[in-house]
Length: 193
Image (tube, rainbow, N blue to C red; front, side):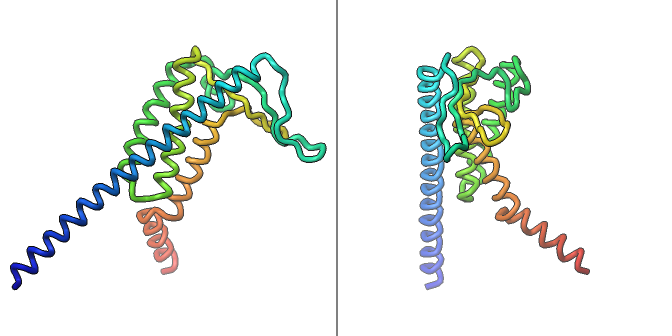
């Protein structure tokens, strides 16, 4: 009887292992498919911007009453955020490529954490969207979103994906990551003593 119970438990573990493995593959498939779709959306929007905004004055996009919120303004950017690394195409390509490799690794390693999967998917799609620009637009990234409420850099959909992804990743790390939350609990206990 014990032998039969052990055999049953072993079979149960094998089934659970196979189901978890298939689920992990499914999660990664969804994440990479979503990243491809977001990257494609970014490229389609940039294509539209090149065709409709290049050489044109800024166009009002979102306005509430007399308050301009967001304009569409065409800009070709050869740098990174706020013009940093301007003219350093290959350095930016190298750094971004290494970061994308790390993000893919991190996504695979943390595929069971939903917020991490979402954040990495966004970061990867935004990174690849801008890599495609740098490779196929002569080192230039097409930007078109121009905030009017305050002075801010002109940016694009890929940049939005990266920023939202990074914010979600920080939320995951600070509030939901077991190792970080356990460390915070331990520090709290030590300060109370």
